[in-house]
Length: 466
Ligand SMILES: [Zn+2]
Image 1 (cartoon, rainbow, N blue to C red):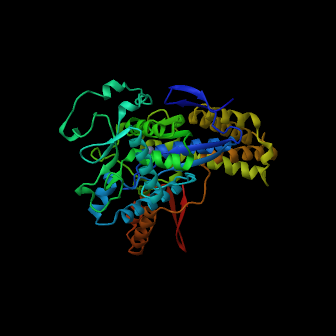
Image 2: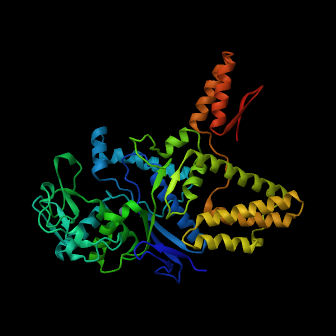
């Protein structure tokens, strides 16, 4: 069976045929983070679905050239650097570093390229594209000195989001702050400098200013991947206006269809509610690590719901991930013991491998793929219990697990002890030195709740993963 994706553009399930199917290469563009803060778990849901996509394509024999941009200039980064009293580049570097660390924690394979919008190469490319659009009357400079895309030059605008363009293009001037534009839907390609920008500024043929967010992605995508891209991903929030704008700008510049397959993941909710700081249910990855959850557990939860469905993130689902992963760990340990030697990677149980792959081929149906995995675990555990599993079977199963895990990345690895747990250990050592046994027990329970077991020996406290 061929790989099929639900294409947001057509709203149909389409067989995946990349531009260069002979060489089996895939050009993949994924909108990256705005580096003004730590990324939250809603952001990571999108990055994990993209990781699953990349790893499944690679397991299917494709070579993936993936670009993920870093938005390091926009209203939020500018506000942030001014509030911190730092130059923009210094302010955003901290969050770029944190982002890369977070990707590692979640076992996300790094993109081939992580271009930054403020890289002079891409700023030059943005200016070049805007100049082309102005020259072809697809863009104009307004009274406020900013340059806008002229929407009525691109009749396909709205097709990705399935919106009616006429509704977006009311006649006449709408509101005071929009009076400079010819039409309300016209979006900024180049934003003229204003006081709030401070020293964040570039020269351009239209005067001093900075690029708009949408043109950043078009410039980096086409510069690194060429005029036509196989797959472009993001969250549903990106569809309108960001991805519509990317299509309009890119296609007016290059004359090619910009993207063949658009894939968008649905929203993430927390405990059934929209995640927001005011609701008190807003979590960065770091917040969850501080609570004692691991990157592997968070990866499991964020990955385990099909990307087109809304994901309800709960602490119960994290606990469920912890027990599912320990089932996998125990199963792998039992098979390893039974196999008693080297893996036999050539002896994959073919039927199982096929079912797992077919599930993912079907628009990345991860629930189906996990269903296959746990069927296999159940079946082989039973065979082990009954003494019906040979060392050769165990080796074959481990070989299959190796290939499945190349996509899932659920395999147990010796993990670093979280700082929060280390702090509790230190506090517990102090309590024990002071013979405060009650406090020592309280801390033991807290360490236990964080997923670790502490034992006391004559050499001090010993910590193991639950
Ligand atoms: Zn983008």
